[in-house]
Amino acid sequence: METKVINEALQFEQQKLTLRTTSDRIVASRKAKDLILRLNEIYKENKDAAIMDLMKRLTVIKRKIEKRLKGRQDLLA
Image (tube, rainbow, N blue to C red):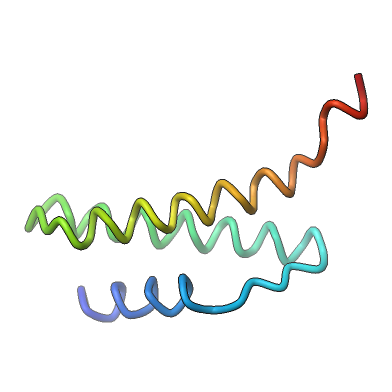
């Protein structure tokens, strides 16, 4: 179970994110969040630093996606 989640997270991290539509971005953001939460449950049990590093990398990807979703707020002001 643990290795399946870790492999899924690594695969998500490696894939090229071509998020053309808003819907694609929302799905990718939710998937990243789900993976991070599942990895966190594993991390709580065994405190593996590699899992923490993977969670941090996924968080960076998730933030980039969310930044793109929110758009440029300075144009509206």
